[in-house]
Image: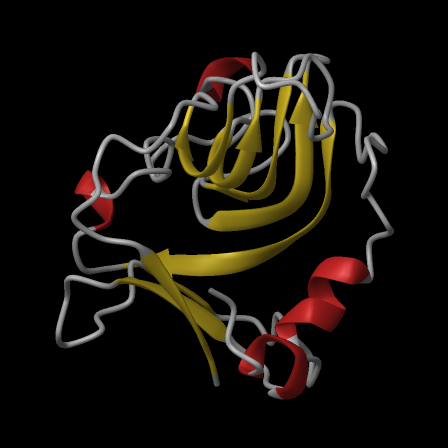
Length: 164
């Protein structure tokens, strides 16, 4: 479920936490005025309208922000490349609308991406549609968050987005 805050709350930074952490410890937190006073929705849509099968990138990320990791990030789904630096992003970044090698993509790629970092299908909003887009076909691997476009292996927690 998306909170109205997604559309309404402006801020400068965001963090992602696990719902099973009562302290709300950041798995990742931006550090460089990533939102620049925008809402999160404004940030994500500023790169374009990628609905209805539109391809969002080819061997790049449309944008990125510097982050720092914390909490249980090493065991969180989607964070598998948190220590890898690759061709399209370094380990200390979160990329927006990323793609690598016409094979997969993510709306928010966590950590490195490219050949040396298992491509671009890790993070939040991941797809294995053979291009950076979401498919209408059930046979294509897509997930809200995870690694390699696979469905999340846990139902013990969800990811939470916080705006500051």
